[in-house]
Length: 179
Image (cartoon, rainbow, N blue to C red):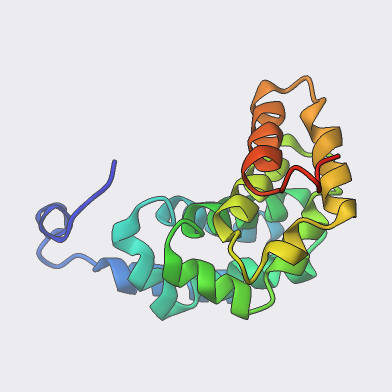
């Protein structure tokens, strides 16, 4: 459920931690944790916070987007990649977040995720690329290699993936590119 500032204040105890402080604590915990399971849990929590637009400014302010991008660029664990891709997907529908992802070289690691055999990561990646599609990014996200991969995904037995791939080909790619 989406929140507003009044609802957040009402739900926060008088001496409770505010949203920005809590997110900052999660960022610190992720950065300093030596436990793989701990990193996964924190990253999953951060991805969940990315679901609500009320958190977008806080997420930008405390560096959550940077953590998601760092994971996409540097990790190989499918679990960590899944949570980072979900967080990026949740955030990418916001124009400020989308611009940040693009300017921080986020397209390349996202495109690499299309090679993985993980349905949730693929769904989040296709959705994110759809959100990041604009005149500036079109040439990067409609290459022959990407279109070929999207055609393969379109044949998936997972209807969610097949439908996302179909929409991507229809809405992002020109008819000449999809042949």
